[in-house]
Image (cartoon, rainbow, N blue to C red; front, side, top):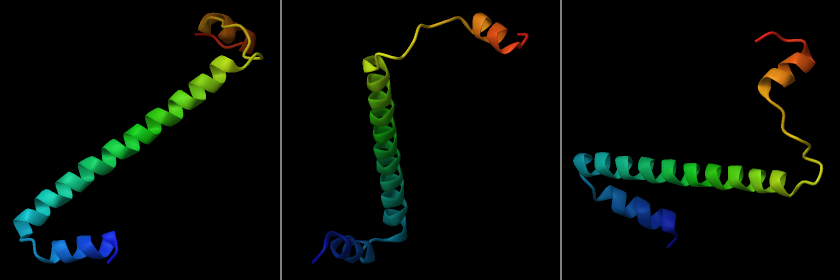
Length: 72
């Protein structure tokens, strides 16, 4: 029996009240998993940037705006 089949069998035995709690738990778990994946992705991109020898020199937003001809 697959995990999905086992979950479906359990769900069939829950009351509506219990199902509401299960939905809340699953929603929270999904949100945490998505946030963890997003955090890992951002950290990976940042580490790649830090290791890039061609990342250039930082400049202020004012200097960047001046280069673009934009007034702040």
